[in-house]
Image (cartoon, rainbow over all chains, first blue to last red; front, side, top):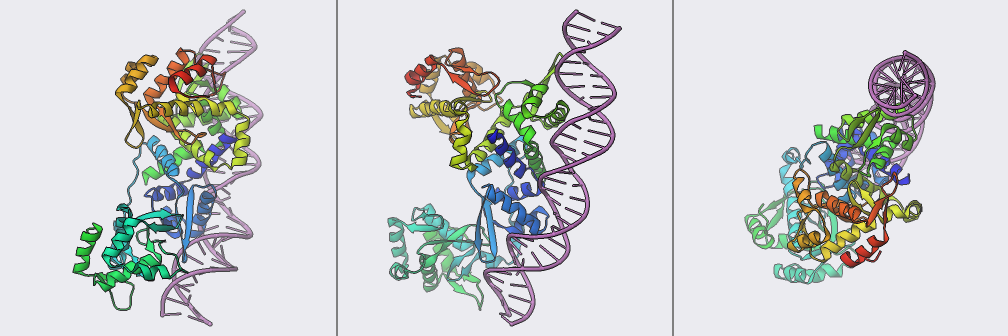
Length: 232
Length: 232
DNA sequence: TCAATGGTTCGGTGGGGACCGAAGCATCAT
DNA sequence: ATGATGCTTCGGTCCCCACCGAACCATTGA
């Protein structure tokens, strides 16, 4: 009886068109802002806020506040699995993310920029992905990474000033920072800043005017390919 | 867009407490009369009739008229799987305190039950674990298993009807089904059904009246020990 | 044929919840 | 400071739908 009630409660949450629309968007596995989800569902922000709070309360969603924004994502692979199995019943296929629309506006800023003192945008994500893919970085806690021994070697070879980075004991060493354009975490903290410094020192990237936008140089593109296996 | 609407419609159907109660009863894989389902859900016959018609229209249920009675059953294993995956979410949400309270009332259900047409609960997990541990079953893709050559031998020795199982080419042969009480996959699909049939045929387990709960016989316990190396 | 039983259709009622306007807080920008 | 932006809370309206009473149809058994 209790399990039946729980079943109906979960299903009822997914059964509202607005909430289903949000969940469907979140099926891309990334985090989206509350206003993004509201706009996509065709409802006002205050209505969406209520929906998101209810789904968060039911552990369907996880939330993370960053600045003025509040990012929501699916709470677990099990949630995605349940949604997918419901979609299978309807004979519908999972919708891949259509990001072409968002890509058009301000492409340079989305490509590469600073996030305070570290790299963000597609380049920041590419660097982070490369480090994790090669086993240089592994998760430590919910919002941090830790550098593996191979990661230390890699950074030394690259010329990243790890000693200075480690002296800033008051700040996180390898922090996850959520990227607002890519909606995925990139590396920040002392290590992220040290990596960005390396990019500047070696002439791989340079700041534009007085903006956060960065220009990736030709040698920078080559470096991204050779050191990080990224084609940008 | 259309796929989102379809998702919300299916979920909304499962989101009503009365309908969820009916679906939960039908999870035993058998057919039940409309009045049976109505009584179980605690609603009048005419209300239940409306619910059943809607779920039938949405292809969640299949119906068969026999005399004055009308029997309803789940339309497909996919429906059962979707319900099971929602139950997994609901079970995860429950706090340990209330969870144990709910399960203390029905420990047998958690121990052994049918999930549509195959074994679930601790016994279902034990069988599945044994098969993988002995190398009879190995992962194939994200949600399937495949039977190894030693697995075929093992099934033959056990008396599992593999030929019939293979003839059901429209359904998955060895599917992973997430168990809501154990939170781990057990084996479903045609092979899962064939294994469950073997348990019934050899008198290792028997259905309890009007429920998904199974009783494991003494010989069943011995068989679990000798064939599957499980102490239950 | 006439009851008895199982199931469905119809009409009216009531409650829950989805929705938005307005207002209140935060954070970021200039 | 001042405004702009993102998110939330509060209050009130409105609509959908679950529910039941009553009547109707179909099958069975006498």
